[in-house]
Length: 60
Image (cartoon, rainbow, N blue to C red):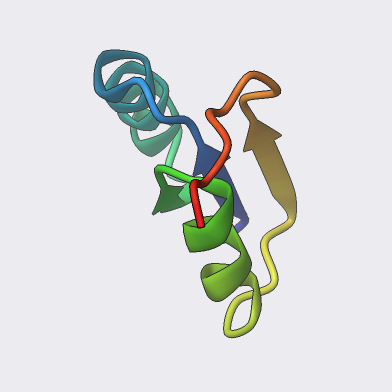
């Protein structure tokens, strides 16, 4: 099965996209920040990344 990583900080949008993709039988990986997405990418190799381009910046 194909894996798709969703990187979206808005939970309602994230859940909607996830629901649609899972109905189509994709494996969905979830990240709510860029940092979280990078951690996932260290272990997983998704076939597609759906990325919110307006993610808030991390405050270090």
